[in-house]
Length: 304
Ligand code: GDP
Image (cartoon, rainbow, N blue to C red; front, side, top):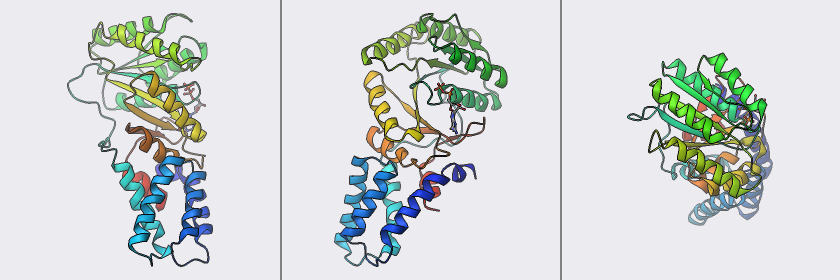
């Protein structure tokens, strides 16, 4: 399965370290817990979430002093699954759109290079495949490459891309895209935005302006603000999440490039810290390498 393959490096790293942590041990004692803490932190789970997990295991050890290391896998799996489930959001079962919002407007945010355009392309392909009508808006007008990229995806997938000249006000593009979405009776409008984190105030202003103009057509748009994070950057992704959640109301997350990195634990930390549902994960560059995130499957593939 591609999820297992995508998380291969994370899993390998995790288990090698976990194995070393318990070698020659029979009980889960303080030393094992210290090692485990180290394993979680070096897997990019994040300090706060790691402490939380360790505390929970400590509580279990306190209740059962003879907890064997052979049970550590199982316990850890339960605690991580529990933590992810506490975010109490329902996982998507497929690439479907919520009912009753047409067009459903998604504003995509994130810094350059994290895989925003690719994620938009992959999402469009999934919607298109379901027979849904998609309109893309190239509102990242600061980079010619970004506009070209999204046009390329549009051609590849067969969906229209609304674009304007370089350095046009991004909100003007968003306006046109949503307008076209309404006129064309589209099911979904996906707007790419510029990922410049130069100053928080600028970013905040830019994103709120984009929101304001689309609300001229659809008062409750955007229905979703999807933040794309590059999982392979580990704790950097968590820092970006902090910045963006301060700048705008992020409603969902896509964590990309989990293939080829051992830092997949970052998904656990980010989901715990921000309580924003992780909706998608990217496990490769190809069109089918975007998956809807499923908490249990994710944890299972970690421990399989
Ligand atoms: P943007 O600047 O945020 O729009 O980033 P792009 O979508 O252009 O992606 C930057 C690079 O990351 C490209 O080479 C993509 O092919 C690559 N990329 C995006 N998502 C993934 C993923 O899930 N896995 C891998 N391995 N590469 C990805």
